[in-house]
Amino acid sequence: MLRAAITSYGRPEEVLTDNGSQYVTWRGKSVFTKELEKRGIQQIVAAPRRPQTLGKIERFWGTLWRECIESALFLDLGDARSRIGLFIDHYNFQRVHRGCEGLVPADRFFGAAPEVKKTLQARVAVNALELARTGLPKAPFYLTGQVEIDLVRPAPEPAVAPGGFPDPVCPQGIITAGMNEGEEEPGPPGTSPLDEGLAELDHPASQGGEA
Image (tube, rainbow, N blue to C red; front, side, top):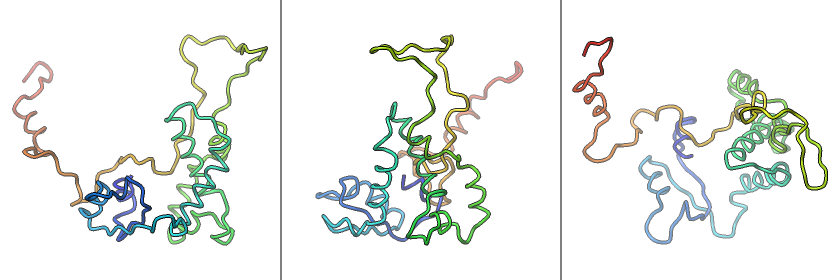
């Protein structure tokens, strides 16, 4: 997630974290801390049992729980990721916030880049909140006792809802673009990014019957 954020928004000077085991260890340094040091980023750790230090994100977790997760029933981890992503789209682009003087967070973030905001906003589904809470509507069925009877003819293959979920705009922690120049991850000792290309030169694939 850190690498994806750096790829999308650039390297920050500081990162504020709580005392979770993924950020802080009692012996030595966590992998997260080492990653920050390697990239020249200062880590600021909040005092234990002091959630006010991280008030904004703590407030967001409460909003996410009350307005989405508490009433949602996820099918699996992939479904949860997709629908929580849709809720974050709703939160950033559609849900007004008193802390932003009645605007949405995207108004504040993209205040100096209205064209970027306009492009991203066009990708956010109008019903993002409803999709986040309830998912795609099920096919109609008749409930009698403890038996559900589908009212549609079974398809030869598993039915997929038309169109599926729209792709959330929020980052999913997956790097889809290259790292910033100079910040690429080094390969294992004794390897080079050129190894694969050199192997192809040594054993070229035959094309059209010719080597």
